Length: 199
Length: 110
View 1 (cartoon, rainbow over the protein chains, first blue to last red):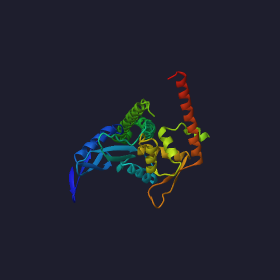
View 2 (tube, chains in turn red, cyan; view 1 turned 90 degrees about the vertical axis):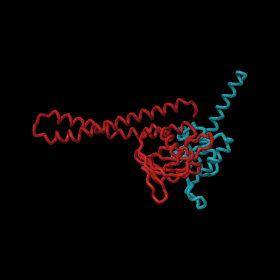
View 3 (spheres, chains in turn cyan, blue; view 1 turned 135 degrees about the horizontal axis):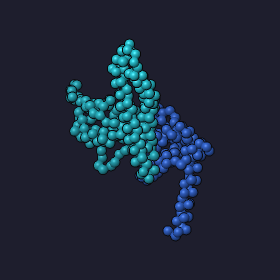
View 4 (cartoon, rainbow over the protein chains, first blue to last red; view 1 turned 60 degrees about the vertical axis):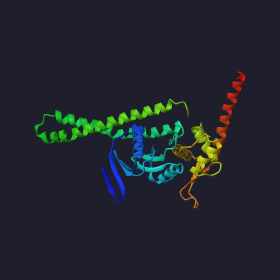
């Protein structure tokens, strides 16, 4: 969807990337910039671009789920070292810099600190599993109890369970499975970095 | 001493950041100084630098001071006494590594 506001041409793209697909997302944003669409805002599976001159721009993401008062220092440090802050979403910070020849850029210069980023991310995913794991047995128990009871006047309870509790449970199980899959993928990234003997 | 044992050995990057703070610097100043000290070998990346500074602040090795008027957005980092002790401890550790490496090589006549 492209829209023109004043002289600025904008477009919104819906696209799904998961936390373990950073490389894919970076490459896609770089390709968009090469076509003249530069990232402006990020939301849940949504990306807002502004039309400009095509440029080869590298995008990198950092993960920092932290309190607001520290953000200024953090962003200043990145901008001082040549990274432009673009957007943030759910703890992810999007930075970009113009590509220069074969120079490789990264937000990290050693494996020890690179690993720390993914460990933080993994912790957040593990904590996010908590409420689901705590509530699931309770929900499942109630569904089984209601459906297996022979009391006829429990019609309303049955309708509620079938229309509400069962879909909710399936949804929670799917989210939980996705989180677990994410934790496994992030652990694999950590293991890959660890297998590199450099510090 | 306990604190020092907990965070030693420092990574190469963290060691360079700490010794560069023998005089107070802000983030960008640290990057430039480390690049110069390492003769262009260590390009500090901002994610690594930010993480190392947070760790050094949390463990009391350095203290951030509020920005001055000449440079209102940037905090200056100052090394503490325990931070200096950590440098001395790390230098001893590195000297031991060098000494052991050299003497074993000498023994084999390499």
